[in-house]
Length: 484
Ligand code: SF4
Image 1 (cartoon, rainbow, N blue to C red):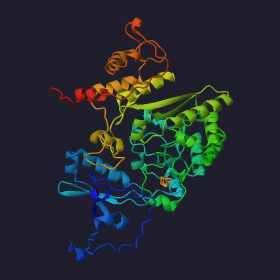
Image 2: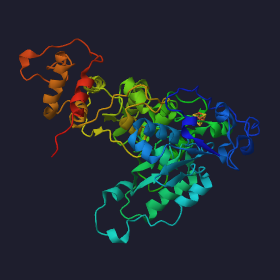
Image 3: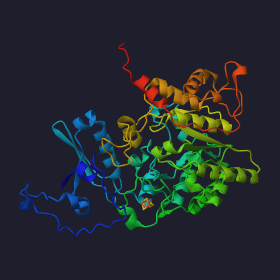
Image 4: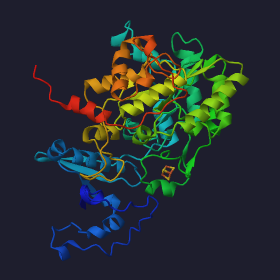
C-alpha cells in the first residue's frame, strides 16, 4: 500500500496533530475500498484521505517521498522529506520510505528493532584485539589514543537534538549492555591492553547517563511518535532512575587494579538532576577536575530550534555540582559547550549568550560553529530556513539562519568575546545595533572601547531586543559573490 508523503504530512496545509498514544485498531479497515471498487490496479488498496492516518496498516504500507529531483529544487519539499523521515524512526511503528531518483526507486527500510542486552553483550564480547590494525603499527593515531582505555556501555539516544543524527544512526530506544559484560571489558583492558596504568578514560556512550533509562510502557513506546523523550520536557513515561548506573560506577571503581574511572561522555544534566545521589557519585568519584557539559545555548529561541532543555536545568545542575564538589573537598569546574550560528540563532541571541559568558566568567577556548550534517533536522532548517519541527507549508514561519562567511564569523567571534582579534567586528556590530553601551571596560560590557574615555557602565546585565540587524547582515551576505 503506497502512500504519498504529502498525505502523511501535507506541505501547505496544517492538519490536526495525531495523538501519539492513539491505539490503532488493525481490524478496523472497513473504510478502505478494495482495489476493484476503486478501479485501481489489482492488489492496491485505496483508502479515503480523511481516514488515512487511522486505517493504514503500518506493516504493509510504504510512504513515497517527493522525488530527488523535486527536493533538490524545492527546499520546502526537502524539509518536508526530512520531517517525514524523522517521524518514521520508531521501529515500533515506522514505515518504509521510497523515493524516485531519475528512473529508479530508492527504498529505505524502517529502522531495525533494538538488540536485547544478551545480543549486545555477544557483539561487544567478540574477540577484538583492541589494537590498531597492524598496518598502522608504530604510527600515532589520535582516535585510538582517545578510545584506547574507554568503554562503551550502550547505544542510542532519546534526546533528539536537532543538530545531531545519533538517533538516526543508533536509534531512539537505548540498547544496554549488561553490568557483567561491562565489568568484564574493564578487566580485559586492565589485563591485556598495553600501557594501561589503572585509568579508564570514559565509561559512557552517546550520552553518559542514558544507560538503562527507558520508556516505562512497551505498548506506549511502540506507538509513540515523539521526536524526543526529553523535549520540550521529560516525558512522564520516561523512567529516569539512575540507580543501576550508580551501582555500575561503584562496582567498576572497586575492581582491583583500577585507580580511577572517568566519565567523559556528554552528560544529559536535565535527567541527572532527577537523581541527586547519582550526581553526588559522579562528582565525588568520576570527574577529573573538569566536567564538560553542553547547554549549547542560553537563549530560548535557539534552544527551541535545537530541542535542548531551557538553561534553568543547567543552573540546577551547577548548584548540585558545586555543592557535591565542596563536600568532597575538590576544586572542580564545569566546562559548558556552545554552538554558534545554529539555525534560529539571531545576532541578538549571540550577544546575550556572550553577555552570559562574561557574567559567568567563562572564556572559551574551543568553540564550534554549526555545520549542516547529513540527516540532521537542523540541516533541513538551515537549507529551507523553515522549521520542520512544526507542520510545514510555503507560508510557515521563516527561521533566521546565519549563512555566509561574515555573519558566521561574527557569531563565532561573540563566543570568544575576550579575544582581542574579535573586538573590531564585535564593536562594529554593537554600534550597528545601537548598543554602544556594551562597549567599554565595565563588568557588564562586552569589549573594551578603542579609547577608554568613551566607555560607559550599565548597572546590570542588559538584554538585547530583536531589531533589523539580522536582516541587514543577511542581506549583505546574500549578495552574489563576484566570480573568481
Ligand atoms: S518515554 Fe514518552 S516520548 Fe519516550 S517513547 Fe515513551 S512515550 Fe514516547
